[in-house]
Length: 219
Image 1: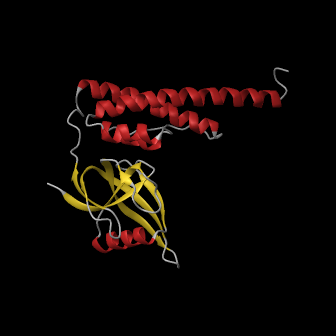
Image 2: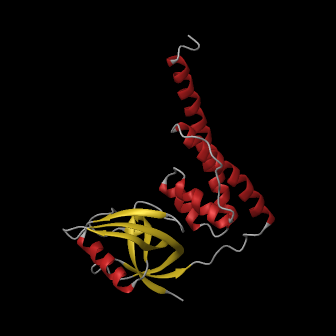
Image 3: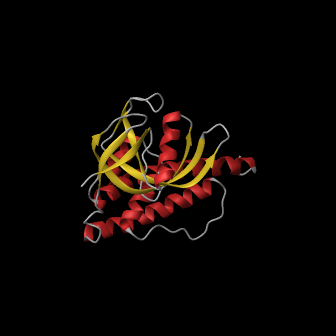
C-alpha cells in the first residue's frame, strides 16, 4: 500500500526521532509547508542523489524519512523557520508531478524484526557504551562537567540517535537509514563511534597538554 506525500530533497539525512531545523524560502517549498499545515500531515525528506537543493530538478534517494512540523515561525515576507521531527522511514515507489513541488508515492517501512536477537542485544550494549563515551568526551572538550550520561534503551532508537548525532558523511548516514536490520545499523554506528571517540580522545590529550604548558607544567 502506498501513500502520496510531499518530498523535500535535501543534502542531509534525517532519522526517526531527530529534530531538524529548516529555513524555507523557495516559493514552491513555502507552498509545501502551507499544504502540510492545512492537512496536518507529514512530508518526506530524502537525501539528494543527483542535483542541487535550490532550483528544482533534484533527484532524491529511494529511502528517506517522513517528518512532522513541531515548531513554526512564519516571517513577514512569507519565509518559514521550522523545527521538524522525524517520524518513520519510507521507500519512494514513484516520483510524481513536480508542480509546484515534488510528490511521491511511498511505502512506509516496517520496524526491524531482529530487535530482540542475541546479536542485536549484544551490539546495542556495546554501542550504548561507546555512545556514552562519545558524549562524555565531547562534553570534556567543551569544558563541561561530567554527569551521568544516558543512551536510549531501545536498539532501534539507539541506532537512530547515534546516526543522527554522529559527524559522518551523508552517504554513510544513508547507508544506516536504508539498512533493514537494526544489527546492521548498530554495526555501522559502532564503527563511526570508535573512529569519532579516538579523534576526540586525541583532541582532548592535545588540549590538556597545552593547558599544562600554559600553567608552566612540563617546561
